[in-house]
Length: 366
Image 1 (cartoon, rainbow, N blue to C red):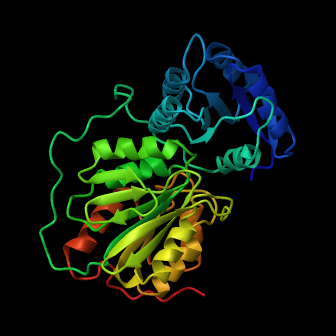
Image 2: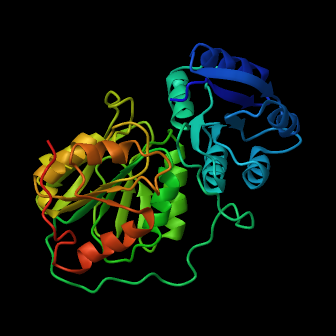
Image 3: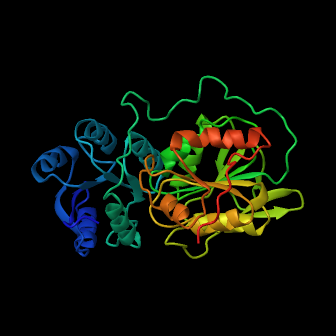
C-alpha cells in the first residue's frame, strides 16, 4: 500500500449514496475522500482541481450518463474507476459495458435507502487493490455497447477419442470479465465442458453469460442447479451463489448452493476447484486462474495439481491485479504462468493433442 492515503472522488447523483460511500471510506485511515460530485460535469472540474487516485462512478446520472463520461475519461485522463451499478438487468448491461471501456471493477449499489450493507469492505478492498494495479485497457470508443458475434465461425477441433471426464476449470476476479472474454472468444468448438467462477455481483452474472453466448463459438449460460456439463458448453456460476462439480455415472453436473462466503467471496473459485478434485476430475482437468485480488482459488488449484491436473495461472504482466495468480504460483499450484493472449492457444493445444502441454517436470513448491 502507498505511504499516503488513496485519494478518492465519489461521483453519484444521489446525495444519500454520496454520504453513505463517504462515511464508509472515511472510516479507513488508508483512504481519503477528497470530494464528491453529483454529475460528470462537476466531476470533470473536481478531477482537474483535486487530482484523485480513484473514482467511484454511478452510471445512471442526469446531463451526462456514466458510460459516456467513462469513455471520455479513459481517453483523456485515464485512472482507476470503480463502478457502482444498480442490481437491474439494465444496470448489469451498463456495468459490463463499463468494464469493456476500461473500468477497474464493478460493485452493486446499496440496496437500502440508508444502509451500505456488506458492500463497505468490498469497496475498501477494491480501492486498495488499485494501488500498483495495471489500468484496464478500454476497447475502442467506436465499439458498440453490445458487441456483435464473430462474423466467421470459429475453428472446430478434429474429433478424437478422449476421456468422457475431460473438463476445463477457470476462475477469475477483478479484471476477469474481460480476461475471460478474451480467452473464451478465441476458443474453438469441440472442447470439453467449461466450468467458470467469476467474482461478480448477483444479476450481473446472467448478463455476463448472455454477452459471452453471443460472442463464443459454443454455448455459454449462467448455471442452474443440476445442470449437466457437456462438451461445447460453458457454465458460469451465478452471482452470490457457489458452484461445485460432481460426477454421476457418465457425466458431470453442477450444484449451486448459497453456503457461507469463502475468502469473502460467493461464488468462490476454491469450492469449484476442490469439488472437481474430490469427484475425480483432476487427472482429466485443465484448470487456470486469471487476474483478481486475494487468494481465492490457490488452494483448490493446488489440490487439483497434486491429484494430476494440468494447471496454469495468468502472468503478472498481463494481469490487472496480480493477486490470485500470484497466490497460486507462490504455493506451487500452477505449473506455469501464461500471458493472457497465450491462454486460449494453450487450452486449444492441450485438447488437440494427446501430448502433455507442459513437457518439463515441475516439482511442487513447499
